[in-house]
Every structure is written in C-alpha cells, then in structure tokens.
Amino acid sequence: MSRSGGLGSNSDSSDRNSLNRSQLLDEFRNNRSPHLQLSDLGKHVVEFAQDQHGSRFIQQKLERASQKEKQAVFEEVIAHAHPLMTDVFGNYVIQKFFEYGTPDQKAQLTSAIRGNVLNLALQMYGCRVIQKALESIDPQQQLEILKEMEGQVLRCVKDQNGNHVVQKVIERVEPHRLQFIIDAFVKGNNNDSVFTLSTHPYGCRVIQRVLEHCLEEQKRPVLEQLHTNIKTLVTDQYGNYVIQHVIEHGALDDRDRIVNEIRGDVLKFAQHKFASNVIEKCLTCGASHHKNMLITEVCGNPNDGTPTPLLDMMRDPYANYVVQKMLDVADSPHRKKMMLAIKPHIPSLRKFNYGKNIITKLEKYFQKQNGGASLFSSPSEFVVHDMMPPPSHAHLGQPPLF
Image (cartoon, rainbow, N blue to C red; front, top):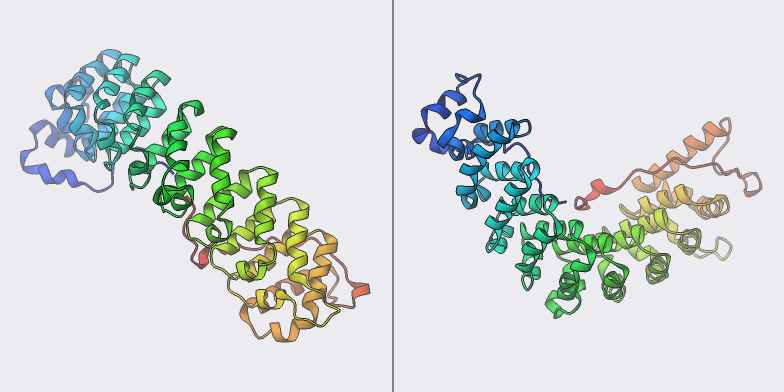
C-alpha cells in the first residue's frame, strides 16, 4: 500500500531542462561517457540527481560506492536536500542515502526533514522520502518525525500522499508510541470518527493498518466503533474492506458478532456488490458454525414448499458467487442440503446465465466423478464429492484491494 521509491519514473520530464544541461550530463545521456564514476560528478551531483537517467546512475553507483565516494556525493546532496526531496527524480537519490548511507548521513538527512515533516508528508515525492526514512532510522530519530505529526494525523490520513506516511508510521514505529494516532480516530468528532474514516478511500487503509499492528487495548475501541456500524460498512465501497479485514485477522468473538449482524439478511447482502464480498470472507475465514449458519439460512426448508433464497441467489450477478463459495467450503451434510434445495429449481435456473453456469459446472463435475450419472439423482442416491473452487467475482466492479 505504501508508495516506495524505485530507480525513477519512466517519463523523461527532465527534457524540460535540455537547453540548460551541462556538457557532462549531455555526454552521459548520449552514451559518450561509458566509464563515468561518481567521483567525476563534482558539482554536477544535483543536476544529475534531478535528471531521470542521471538519478538512476547515482542510485546504482551508491549501492557499491566506497565511503569516500558516498561522502563526496552526500555533501552536494545535503546542501540541496529540500529541493531534492520533492523532486520527481531527486527524491530517489535521497531515499538511496537512507538505505545505503552511513549512520551520520542518515542523521543529517533526518535533521533536514525536521521542521518540514507535514509539508513533505503531503507532497507527492516528499512522502516517499519520509516513508523510507521511517524504515531506515533508529527509534529516537523516528520520534523526531512523530512529534511534528501530532495534531496533524487526520489531515494526513485524508490526503492522497499523507495517508501513506501514516500507514508507514503504524507499520514501523513501536505500538506504544502510536496512541496519539488512536486518540485522533476514537476521540474525533463525527466527521473524524472510525466509521467515517472506514468509508474514506484513504482512511480505510489506515484503519486496516491499525488493526494489523497496534496493541489489543488500542484496537478494541476502534473495533467497538466498527461493530456499531456493521450493516452500513459492509455495503460501503471502502468500509467493506475494513470489515473483511476484521473477519480475516480479528478474534473469534469479532467474527461471531459480524456473522450475527449479517444473519437474517444473507440474501439481501449476497445480492449487494460490496456486501457479497464480506459474506464470501465469512465463508472463507469463519469457523464451521459460521459457515453452517449462513448456508442453512439460504437453503430454507425444501419440504414446506416455500421458495429457497438459493433460487434468487443463483440468478444474481453477485450472489451466485456466494453460492459457489458456499458449495466450496461446505461440509458434506451442508453441501447435500444445498443440492437438495437447488434440485426442484433446475428447469427455471437453466433460463438464467448465472444459474445455468453453476448447474453446468456441477453437472460436468459430478458426471466425471460418477461415470456419467446425473448430478441430481434421487436423494438416497445422492453422492457428495469435494467441489472445485469457485472463481473470484472481483472482475464485476469491486475496487482493487489496498
């Protein structure tokens, strides 16, 4: 999720400076300096760092450079640290020094960041420098950066660049140092609540990092606010990811509470573009009693003549994938229960693409396993086999995972 630096952008926007390019850089760009070394750059370090090809050259050389070569380059870099940190190509050179520089060089760069943390965190390239710094410096230096973020957490969380910095802070800083972030979420007003952030395109990512890395006593108030809004969050384009995260990584008690909220409305949620993903996650990561509870609800009672919810689910563009997931995870008795509930509706289901696809798949599989015998023989002859795993329905419009 976090933005990280590479060897530079593919777009050669450094052509903007082609008229002012030095002879050294021009010869290098035109492959007329095949034996160029870092020691040859002299006062041209910054110019090279702000050029796509020159930046890549410095980065590659720094990985194998001697201490003397590094220091010569660093002296030029530290003198122009701020413009390089926010430059499309220069930021990668700064990152490389955080990765391969000496402890003293890292300390000097951290000092250069101090006093400008917020501006860098909100800037497209500066945010990458801070992330790399957090990965590379010691805890005491991390605290120097954190001090400037106190009181600015929510502003960063809601920013397209700043949210990556907050995520990196949560991932790399000792949890007991992160209480100021938790307080900003839990004690915020209605516009800054855990619920609001969970439905925000950037905030939802940060909430997930909190649930991954923070202490139980820090996560619990966040989880409690989530539990009070389960039914709204599961249908939200961003909130559904947060709830899926709780199901996958949370405690059994949290999964129990989520399944109990969904229980009674499985059909409605299965037919929803986003909530259907939450049900699939319950089926994949839930305990046996969670799966059985959800499957039993949609099977209905085939003996009382009432239509089974499975009929509508198999005809639905989202819910049909939930049915396939149920078939995949069900134990033998519950898979048989599903098949018996589906059996009376075969003729009508064949008229719908989604239902027809499921039936065709199951018929082919069972015929292969039973020497050509029909999938839906009499109940007494019904043979249950392991199901083939269903495809994901991410292609139906679900936003990409974070």
